[in-house]
Amino acid sequence: MNRDKQIKDVGLVEAEKRRWQLVSFSLLAFMALLVLVLLGKSTSTKTIFIPPNANAAGKPFWVADAGASPDYFQMTADYVAQLALTGDAKNAPYNLDRLLAIAHPALKGALKAQMDAVALKMRKENLTQVFYPLEYTVGDNKPVVAIKGALKTWVGDKLISSRDTLYRMAFSIETGRIYLTEFKEASASDPLNATLKPEAAPNATP
Image 1 (cartoon, rainbow, N blue to C red):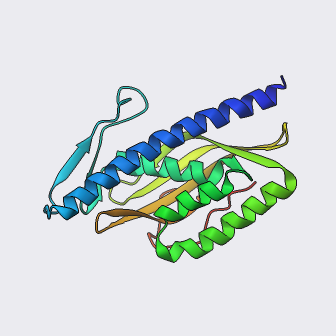
Image 2: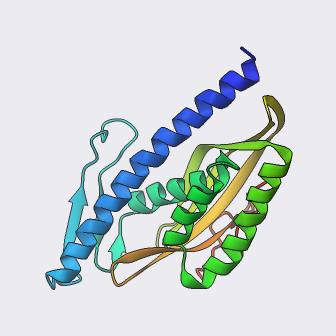
Image 3: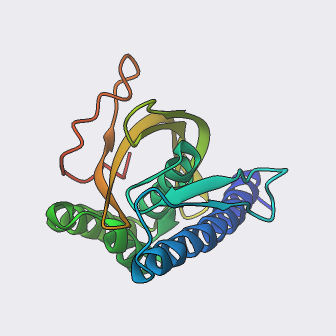
């Protein structure tokens, strides 16, 4: 089997596994927040979650009516990065739906247009793209996360591009719900310089 294809297959499997882990954790947190709101709990109420793999990649995190722990934002950022940067033309519609579900309303239009263009290019050129996260930086006082990683692109079974990338994401929590408010390539000299206002969608292709 072609070595590039082996690397691609392994990467896709790992990304899919990580994606579903994050989906599970995020849904669990959203359900907890909904329960807190319905029961009329105060904003000081905090719920702590311990993932099944807490001794491995997963970390305990907490969520409350008006905030969440840095680990929660990091996991959500990883989930967003995989949806936006890993996939092909076949799963692009699914990824877009999941991404729009957590995007801030002011971001949805630009995000959909950008991702539709990416999906069209993938379909025309038979592209597959995988993002391998390598390093995370989380803002101390703001819900901002920078993810550094390798973005690889294949045409069929041939690897045509591999480049180091850095993306910045910003989030907000409104009435117990998390929103993606910014997703863009960042500068290595100042990766967390987020405005926290809705901005354009990321450049998701090489």
